Amino acid sequence: MRFSHETAPQVLVWQVATTRRGDGGLWFEFERGIMANTTSAKKATRKIAARTAVNKARRSRVRGFIRKVEEAIASGDAAVAKDALQAAQPEIQRAATKGVVHANTASRKISRLAARVKALAV
Image (tube, rainbow, N blue to C red; front, side):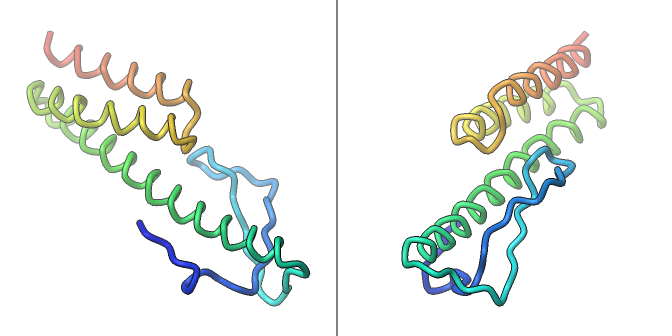
């Protein structure tokens, strides 16, 4: 997902809320009406908005791959589930490499999906 500075919100202040979202990510809250005072603060706001958009797209993509594996497991078709897992595994690992999810979380997710797919084949 491409993000340009022209579409970036210009009048925002970044806050990290203390609440955690269900997907494990921090909940970023953007408030309107408060202008950043310095040029570097304005740039930081733009960078944060851009990174947030990219990370949301990556997280959504990973969820889609995981959903396909879980649907294949639910259908009971071992071959389709195996193919879906082989497609999902590099995406999950890439998300960990990019910092979207923690490395241990990615490893745990892959391990549990693989165990469920293996149980189908038996």
